[in-house]
Length: 509
Ligand code: FAD
Image (cartoon, rainbow, N blue to C red; front, side, top):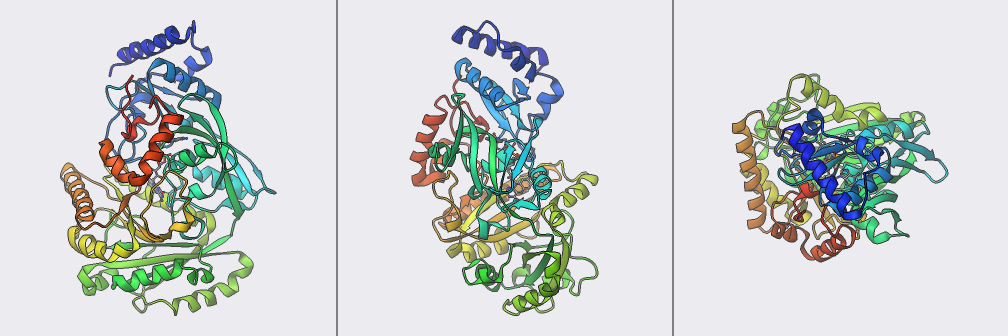
């Protein structure tokens, strides 16, 4: 849309506000924070997925939570929508403003802020648009760090808390939304509320995993623990899926917890190559086993890699080898397929950024990403393996496939995110890149087939980072939690102006 047209539309929306609420002018400070500059609007019209294109009227660069509240009140009165944008790393336009609908994107990243760390209370207060990498750097200055992570740290606090925020620590600490003490939230009515388990708890739980539907997180109080110095990182390979999942499930069990592991993940190896294994660079040429030779002998040509870590301090370095050796004896992986590395804690947590830089240098980062993330109940993971990894997938996967189990009791059921109805469920993440239109069509079709397979086989999987286009699909996704989700929406954002890019509720200006 031409800049001039956009300006007219924005002015129209603002004029409507002026007429409605009787302001003579919007506060100058607020006006100066709204940009209709083409390059900024363009940047706020796309996300990491590159599958969808939005078109906001303007982009706001807020200086405070109050600025955001003023804009939301203006939207509430004036009939335009508002979407917070963390780091724009959604896949399906969840943070965008749909074309043809009037709306403003709030660039949460334009303000920075990791507040001071409270060592006594073991928490840190951070601005909702802050990146996790900066939270890590700031807390490490105090020898502390958050407990639950995502694999990639260039994501905003508000963005991951709106979903769940998961990585290999989730089996033990739960997702990031289980590790937050308090939030400041601007609701869809423009109120600024502090909420926690004790105060405004309905809003607190609604917002955590709430897909941006109930309010904009401007501050989060995140739980901390003493940070380790180093990480021993182990990978072992399996050709037998049952043995692989048995070991993964043992490691996350109460019994396995005695091994004191800090991170448990895994991935599926269908074939090799940079695009398929960009997260897995530590299979070095000096490895004792060539993966390609194992692949050929694997059941259905598929290999599974279990990975785990043990964090430690320098003074524990002597015992770490023995601890790992004692643990490996209990696992049933392919003999001699042990890959070990050891690195500083920060380097481990920030590992995916290295892969990002490598892909960027080859022009392989800014391409369409038809990702699919599913939570699969433990009782059906073998069927999923047969039907998908050894069936639908073939050998053209175009990206890493993660698979790791989590314990449902670490997920607070009062939060908005939905997970399968079993004590243990797996994340299965297809993190694919489409290098041309044909690949995009092929991979998108494969995603559709995987979802259809889950449906037909009644696997009862739930999408993580969900994407649907009709309200009926959203109702099916939430199941018996839909009524609660809906009534929370009516309570906190009755005019449905927030995060319309999720396509859950229709916005009528
Ligand atoms: P955006 O895409 O900007 O926003 C996402 C949604 O949240 C939008 O609806 C938006 O309106 C809303 N939102 C944003 N900020 C706020 C706020 N302050 N208050 C309220 N609502 C808000 N996820 C994991 O759990 N684990 C991983 O390991 C992981 N790895 C990833 C790796 C990569 C390379 C990428 C691209 C994504 C990964 N994700 C992972 C997914 C990621 O957590 C989500 O896509 C997340 O939403 C991205 O954060 P963002 O700040 O970019 O959010």
